[in-house]
Image (tube, helix red, strand yellow):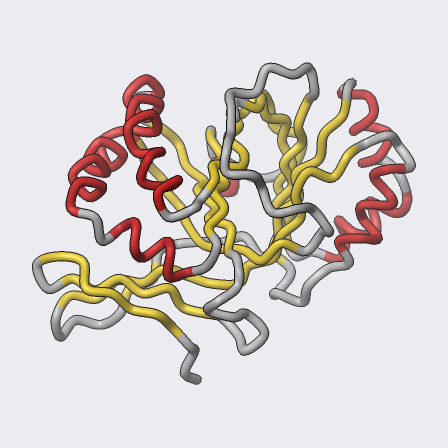
Length: 241
């Protein structure tokens, strides 16, 4: 089955594509880039972020969330990563415009050196959150963040229902997304290769105390949601952006 895609030549005969995984996911709507990875050097990765962010904002993208693992609550080693970075882009074309930049490509060599076990894909936002403003800042608040990603065969989920469940425990839904697009690369006559991306859905929740998460996670309603998924990873993360 063919999927709609946008493709741009990058360099040296390499083409990069953003590929919709289904007809319900447009190539003109906003997308949320999900970077899920470990690091070989957090210092080097943070430096890369600091010099690459101008390229993101130049295409009206916004770094939306960056968090570092505190501890795992549920899940397997294979599903866990130290860092989660989410970046908003107005559409796939804006993302491709950014990565075509030769200067951005040179800076991205630092990212390659700094990360490992890198997974990447795009999501469509499913909660009713607003499009982020262009300005962003380091997070200095006191909230604790819970990251829950899951596989469910891409059957979707009721984000607003989950938002109501969370709210009943004074837990705030910061982001709810579903897998919508993949990134692929092809060099000349080679086959298209897509980047690994194993999340079907992602929730980011925030609370003042960890105990609020415990009560929510142990509730009958949330346990029913967990059981609907083929796998679940849940961890506490310290927000940086």
